[in-house]
Amino acid sequence: MRGHISPLPPTIHVFSSPSSLSSLLRSIPTATFAERAAVCHFRRLSNPRANYAYSTMSSSNQNSPAERSQQPMLASQRVKQANDEAPKPGYFPLGYKAAVSQWWASISPAVAEHNVMAFVPYLQKPPTHMQTGSAPGYAHQSNESLVMDSANEARPVRTNSTNDPYGPRAWHSNLVPLSGKNRALNEFTVERIGEDVEENLVMLHGYGAGLGFFYKNFEGLSRVQGWKLYGLDMLGMGRSSRPPFKVHAKDQAGKIAEAENWFIDALEEWRILKKIDRFTLLGHSMGGYMAVAYALKYPGHLNKLILASPVGIPEDPYAMQAAMPEPEESSLVNEFTQDQEEDIVLNTDGRLKTNSDNNNFLNAKTGATADPKKPDATPRRPIPKWLSYLWDANISPFSIVRWAGPLGPRFVSGWTSRRFSHLPPNESQALHDYAYSLFRQRGSGEYALAYILAPGAFARSPLIRRIQGVGRQPLPGSSLSPEADGTSASSVQAAAKTLTKETGIPVVLMYGENDWMDIAGGYAAEQKLKEEKTKALESATAEEKKYENGSAKVVIIRKAGHHLYLDGWEQFNEVMREEMEETKRDSKKFSGL
Image (tube, rainbow, N blue to C red; front, top):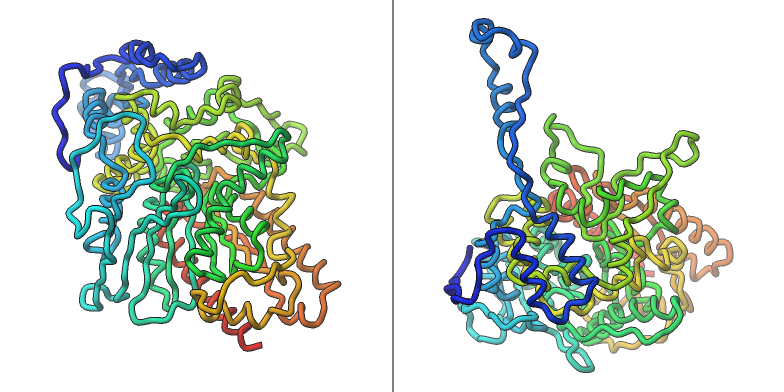
């Protein structure tokens, strides 16, 4: 536990049993029936399994005591038996007392983000501005504070080549205000000192997460010369501001468009404020979905689109070519039973698993193994009714964390203990604190989920129907002055000013080797993009053919699941650096035409 923990007041009861959750529910007068039902479901999960022990006995163990004494067990057998006899942990490993202590300490998102960023190599003093976009839903605040030059801002931390072999680099944390009421984006940047900014990389996180989850990528990706990195918290998530999320449209298509625009309009406004003409956009999961939506609505500003395990590509669940898991194995339940180290990194045999990691609140699938064309293929099972009910009622997993109050950290530990099980304990603890500090914030952007995705993480407007339009949209007039950041990118824009439509951009789809997201959907998207390029070239002018830059490919990251940027961060960073170098070469090539 980091920092100072305030003593618990006499009125705070340390929960000694899951039954205390009933009194917690009664203490929430505003909770609806659906809300109470949701927390009651988690109450059942939070009841630790009864301790039990199994012994794996060999045939020799069934012999007489004299015979057994002459057949000593191998060391590996003793370890296996000890593991089998060890009590099995409950769904939520964090104890009730520790959960209440964490809830009362209330580590702020700023402090939690700062602690995560402290693990970035060569970043000795992580810059962390203290202006989080919203306050949590209850009043207890942490007494912790960061030792900084100013209470409201963090100056860039500069390192030199003596202690930074890939620098010097400047790191900066900032809250960028946008137009309108309570609209601002949390931003973390890395810039190479003494070099011109030729290219820009913008990184978008997944559903309910924050830019801090990219802590293993900022240093590795900022080694590429001429690049400036921007990590952003999407509007209504992370440490960005959390304005009320409202949808006014009546029809489904209008609701989907309005929900998408809520995020991508904020990204476009941020781009204009930063005077960035063109950039490379990386989006993970829901961030990948929004990256595609941005590319379609705001053409002419992307040099490359990189989608890391994007959500929402398949046409429908049956297009996934896999059997639906049993209801008790799907969605949120699986979130608390899958272990990252055992199920993704290594299994008990030391070999990679080939099933899914399911480490995402959006999960509803295990593996693409069944073939519907085969007569013996297992038919898909429906989404559990309780999940569909909560989903349609727009009750998010984070709502449950907030309603649970002192039990919130315990519920979150069910996810973080498994999601980060392959990391060192201190990093895992920092990420747990960071996740809980974000999950407990006032609900905002998370409520867009039900408008964008149907139960089971399948898009209501699948990207497979739209992705072929990426890089093929009509070009609007230039909206920026020549002062735009990124000289080579601006040269490309100026050289191609006679074009009336986009001439394609490279699209890279990245998946983990054991990703629960639909990899087949990625290959289908690749095929659609290539077919659209062939079609465009058939009617292209000579000028358009000269600037044609469309391409698509799928990359698989080894020993990684859905969070491939974290599970397989070394290979992920290597692949990303290669893509960044390629983008630099392309920009110089087209600027010389």
